[in-house]
Image (cartoon, rainbow, N blue to C red; front, side, top):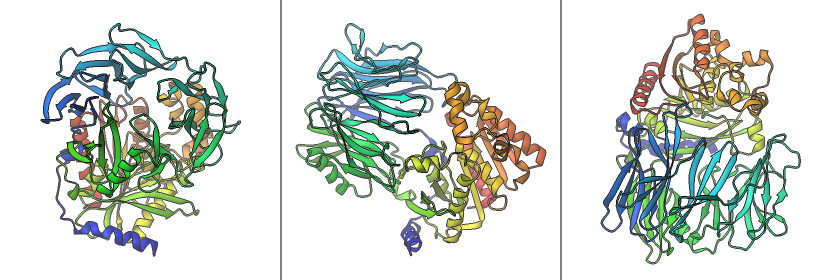
Length: 630
């Protein structure tokens, strides 16, 4: 009965009229990636994506006319943006050649007048992993808060815009601790450390007035326990902590900074808490989680923004709401609305009149009515383990005997969420049913579920994908003669290993920047090389060191079992999954006569260049058409 209900709930998508949308509409950059309102509410600064760089634009909110636009050069990306005062926009800028390649670097933090003049780098880091703006501190026209990640750790600084001098806000609690999290008065209160032996995090905490730190190690010797800062409350010396020390999933706790008392407030037995909602005072009022669709757990139900948020949910049913920032007088708020079919639209809410004004859209050229709905599904694996995922069906088609693509995510310590996915929408628009499964080993469903994937890369994790595919077949949604699998990174591994493990199930497989030789992971790639012993220990934990098992679970050594057509795409400058992985697989494919083709580009771990992305997705669609039709 449950499966029948799921199927019937999907039928509505057939009522829409199918329209072929150009590939470019799905892969071209977003117009507005993020936005920030000026402290006085008169201007909006936004980051726009161009083909090879980002642009910062400032808009007059009364006339909605542009006041200025600024680019920072070829391949420069703006990582975050805020206001220092009513006249000055702040942004951190990074040069990006390709994701996880060898050529990127941080330019630093820039300040720019709203009219585009006097743009200059105010904080140029040295050898750094990244810089970001914590707070523009609009109440203080001279100073801002920034964060810099270096080999010696992550540190918070107060930077003086006039003197151009920076001062460390507070030393980390110890050498393994992160930059301290701050209370609403910008005082360090919590620092998260990492225990190398247990691979668990622990807390150092103190009140804002205190100079000495106290340690709170909830792991107590247990492996891979996560404990971290969740936000400030509206109560003095009370903060929120997120931790899974006492249960598989990450729960919500209240920590008293004065006496160290910890109290459990909420836990979902199915998924971890994944985010938070803050009011204008930087107090956390709610926490978000996504068991199937986005949900909120409120910790301050009486806060005015809590009531506002609930009202917005009623005004925008079926949409996710994200609050961005407030004006200094707290009378105006910028928020974003998005969903599985809506790429995102930014609005301005006048909190004194409750009037809403549309500002800008992420992808104005896309019509949500033409997009495919993403529905949550739950299945049982062959061993009884409950698995969750998302099914997207092509609009305008009867959901029966469809050509089908299962799309395993990368990681594998990651998960798929409900929301707008251009890649999935592209395949659905071309007539393909797409299933994204959070197989065992995925994160977000508790530590036990994640650890269930250790040493199971080539076996049970692949069985989960097979079981999900057969679920779609048995439901009558997927045509058993028209099945394909496509994934990137770990998903690329899962694709080829599924072709090895189930040679008669899939007609084709598409591996994108994938891992194919588990033995080479220990000698080729930055997981082991860059992270040293820690990286090698991680590989041992997830895949072991038994050479026989590593060969058995490596597609490169088992190509003689593959019957499906294979398409491979890889980046020549990929440091996470270098070309040695592709070369090892191709050697095996050649020796066993598998029908395959290869696309390589001067890219990192995933294609960034618009032309290369166009080439890849054009070939992906034609490859699907050739092998399973639409």
